[in-house]
Length: 412
Image 1 (cartoon, rainbow, N blue to C red):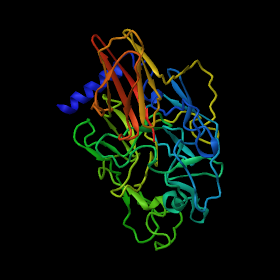
Image 2 (cartoon, rainbow, N blue to C red):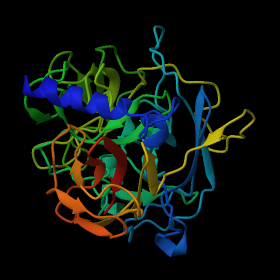
Image 3 (spheres, one colour):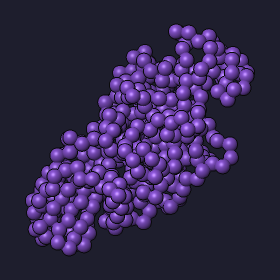
């Protein structure tokens, strides 16, 4: 009953006219947009610079550089550079009822801060035969920085696994936020979700349904067929897990399907959606396949992947999504800044508004996460968010006969 009440509260927030416009959905509003000109690594503008959308697509302009500190990358001679990306992602995702599309080398989706998502492979295979493909987490892991990312040869900074600096992956008390979107248009969540796909039960870490195979030699593939060529011996130099073919999918073993996702209720989708999750183990290390993959659940629009992807041309009428610092409803005008914020949020009602206003912050479950703040016309008030995990929250301002909500993005 309590969970249903939270879901009802959240659905009402989504329906509030001051929070949404007809076309604004999570794939439009779920990005960390740089509204202050902040820079990241090597002075490059950080996070997402612009979000544009039509009824069919969203266009995300980004550098590929996050706001959090990145580097150094031991043993990796590459350096992160401005990628000048414009990604085009469908807003009408659909299940693929035919053969599943393999997640490609290079970017497979985008984290919510505009950083690229790579799959588990590192582009190298045993004897260059393309049969036994190296696991990037094992082979390249020593070159990852403290945020578990590194740059590719073209300067594209990316994460092959859980981007632990993007959200609080140790917070198992709440449903993880949306932390990205795959190129089939479905959302990607952090490591935690509801125990039951219908939105009930406790919050838990989503378990992968893949496991290491019980093999003594690399002569067969995960489906049991004979490998076109044998792999190297299993030993301390190349233990099980060194190659992605060392893993097998066991339906029902975990919470997620063969694509590392499931159809489920989430805070942003109270009616349910297909969603991917990043997967970690009990020590917060990545668990294969780590991110969406090794195949996509949905259909991949032409041009969404491949060498030319990430440089889309906007050739249809679009609206630029504006992360507003001022919201207006029923005569109530309130400025909220900075948004996104890294800790302190200032709320400033305009003069002439009601003098009995109160403000409070809620998480995506509809649970209050701050004390109630009394607001007075023309007098700024602050809410300290330093004790909260990075993610999306909702500020509610209410008084006699008026109420409004505003999305607030907390970064770290």
